[in-house]
Length: 343
Image 1 (cartoon, one colour):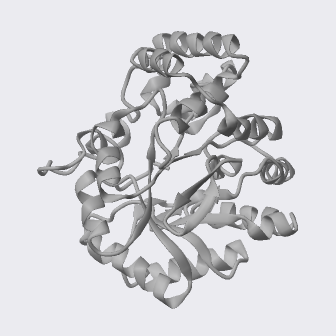
Image 2 (tube, one colour):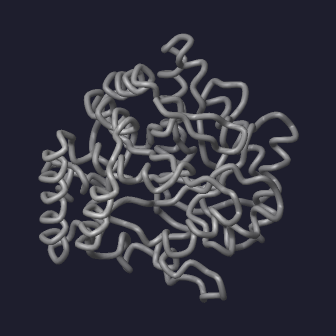
């Protein structure tokens, strides 16, 4: 598989987002999840993304077990995980107190059964503290040898600039797909100006950009059920756009998912796609998209199609009022959940 670089890390251009192996998209079995991770390794995937908040650490344990049982390939894989979203039976909160992040990292290392975290993200910025203090605490973990590289997730352009003024930021993770391109207005340009690679999660629009009608059914997924892109107002036009994507993919002998991923990778050599799936066959199909070459005319046709997807990605009822806008803030991300239950 084609390789890309996140700071000092060399990784596959397509990784595996592991959240759905434990939460958010309906029931799954441990055996099915382990099989999906092994299929990803066999397909050349080397980046596996999890977080301490995914089912209260159980997802990290699953990823660690699956990679540990995969022999040399698993040992060579790189793991990204995230701090500070605390998920308990009582609710979800962000807690990025600089003095607690080391404890989060130690707990993640233990659950993953690894000696070091390859890429450690600030999952969300805690509004109680300057972002410089939060990433500075993660930089201390690099100096300690507990972490190899630092990343940030769902930050504004202003926050990204502040983070890079404090330490080397090897990746910024954000939602980006044919169905959600708001980050191209501000965070992506800021990342490129600052030399920070982009890791795009939900590159298949939470299942919207697939040919599988079940993947577009909000009743089988907690995340789709609260996503306005799947509600009664927007589901019709979004489904029509997704069906058009499937038609285009068939013209080029691809799956809809592979075409959507190929489009994303064509946005730049600094982009890594992070699709998730619990099915080994889909993991393999997603990985194969790394080798798809698209002509400029195909890119233009997909760009035109992307404008047909409608709606924001979070409903107002799911999020608290956003913080007051400051110069340089990412307007799109103000509508997202900075501090609560976004994955």
